[in-house]
Amino acid sequence: LTTKEQVIELISQVNDPEVPVLSVFDLGVVRNIEVNETTRVAHVQITPTYSGCPAMDVISTEIKIAITSRGFPMPIVELVLSPAWTTDWISEAGKEKLRKYGIAPPMTRADRAAEFGQETEVPCPRCESTHTEQLSLFGSTACKALHRCLDCLEPFDYFKCH
Ligand SMILES: [Zn+2]
Picture (cartoon, rainbow, N blue to C red):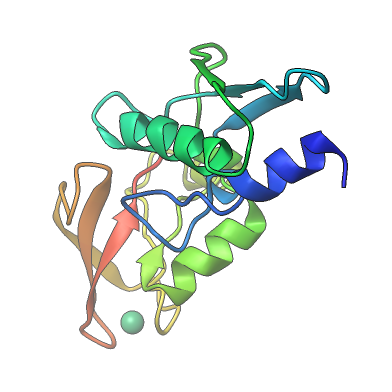
């Protein structure tokens, strides 16, 4: 493995503190990684999710710890604010992991456009029924809304779109 591949490998073990099944790559927040072959200083650019989420500080720190502990001293983790992160950057693998975790993944912009002003019906992550209702705009964290399936009657978190 090249030093850059080693760094990618280490960073792929860092998960979203709010949704631990998602790695930072699933979440789509890692923009760029450069590693100086001589000094082994890694320069990592990440884009914050939403301002309401305190998770970004945690992610930044976790990335530094993950790299530093494996012999890449003094990594630089830089926040890139533009272009702004959207839930469309969550990978397909990430969406599948969310579903298995019982969280309805965010709909893509295209899905939402198709709704054309209709109230978005979020499919239940358990039975895939679209017969669901929103119980609360805020679920277990500010980034999620609490919904309930009217078929299997299970409440579930919906990862809100941004
Ligand atoms: Zn259901």
